[in-house]
Length: 246
Image (cartoon, rainbow, N blue to C red; front, side, top):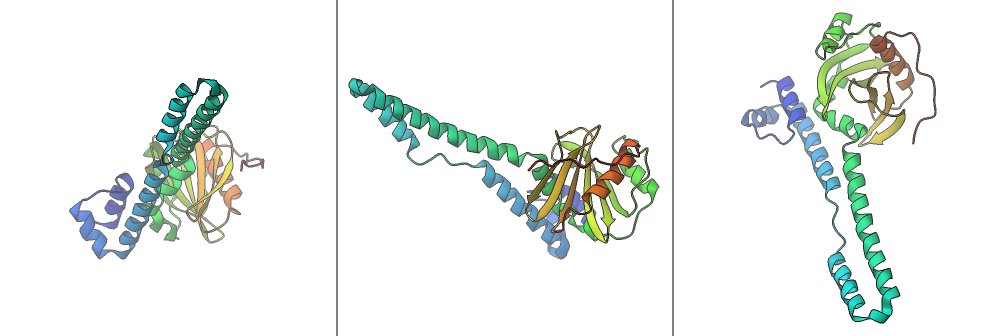
């Protein structure tokens, strides 16, 4: 098993127990590091979905109901207790729902996609326009505009449940990850930061772009996004600066 095959399997099934993967991981420090990052993220994602019910909540609700039946004259108090219990349940369910939604958000999925692909950030040699077009052809997507200068990596892949094309474009010597998701459109541009990555998601006429840097800054995002919009949509218009959602 080589590094490329190891990382493709890791991206699809981070908890895979393939003996060949274990042997390669033990022999390759870079893949060992990628595997450890993927396991940490899986642990964090699982933890986000496990929201504990407040201790004694069931007993408090039952006690409030029993007390209300025994003390008919204290209807007002019973109502307050029932309301408080309902609020506790609603808050617990709301927190669990929010964490589940956030764990499936595009920023979370984009960052989770990166550990097996981390070695692509070290590539410095620009690839040909034909190689980039071939990467988009893997998703049956045309590329009507010019390929952005400094593109060093392209691969069709999956970002969570969404088909995507994964690119890396170097700008001012720094690698910027660009994920194009033709079947997922976000409502508006929004900055985010997760697990050491800074990023931005933004809509296109069709689909969305997600830009990421590992510990860098967002300074090159506007120029890189404008170049990829021109390549993908075949337009000479650049992104208009607009207020970003928090």
